[in-house]
Amino acid sequence: MENKKVTAPGLAGMKSCGEKISVLTAYDYPMGRIVDDAGIDIALVGDSVGRVVLGYDSELKVTMEDMISHSAAVSRGVRRALLVCDMPFLSYQISEDDAVRNAGRLVQEGNAEVVKLEGGEYVANTIHRIVSAGIPVIGHLGLTPQSVHQLGGFRKVGKDPEGADKIKKDALILQDAGASGIVLEAIPAALAKEVTDSLSIPTIGIGSGPDCDGQVIVTHDLLGLFDKFKPSFVKQYADVWQVMLKAFENYSRDVKDGAFPERK
Image (cartoon, rainbow, N blue to C red):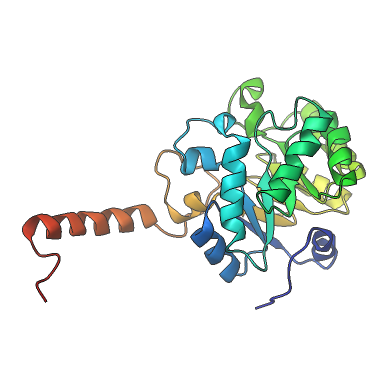
């Protein structure tokens, strides 16, 4: 397994040589270690932590303090993987100065190596400011969970010509602003391929077909560790929820029956 450290500038090189980029979410120290040991290229501390770890009903409730705490925990377990951290809702939308300051906190206090933020042309200047401060940025187009109310729910984006043209235009704008890569979420596969082919920076797909330069899945969905919602595009590689449930039930039965602990 390749042990060379993954870096933000190195992502474009991975794209140019045709090496697919693997991305999984991580929210704590043990998950960071396992993701890193498995050879995953990017450990993403996503604001999905709100739903799958903190029990919130929306990513919009995640705070800077939440993201800093979880990013710092993951960073203690990651060595090779690139540590990317989501900027939470309202941490970059109010002003560019706030955005730079909050991105700096994720790096200083959360040990993030890259920050990720959602949006198209309207965040281009913000991305430029953050990059100018020495902090790499990954963009996010298509279905942007922090704008879910504006979008009218979790649904495919870019299916009509006007929406597709906007995504293609925004992708080039984010690249010109200095983004190191772009997540494409829930857009048609043909559109994702067109955007990917038009950029020199990599695209990371989530529910956007096989032609992106990399793929990301929420780890709890991959493991079957979150039972409230499963996106249709997810391939579940394990059913950890049921494994843990069975183990806990067996433990509880042994305690109540007096079988644990054994006298020896």
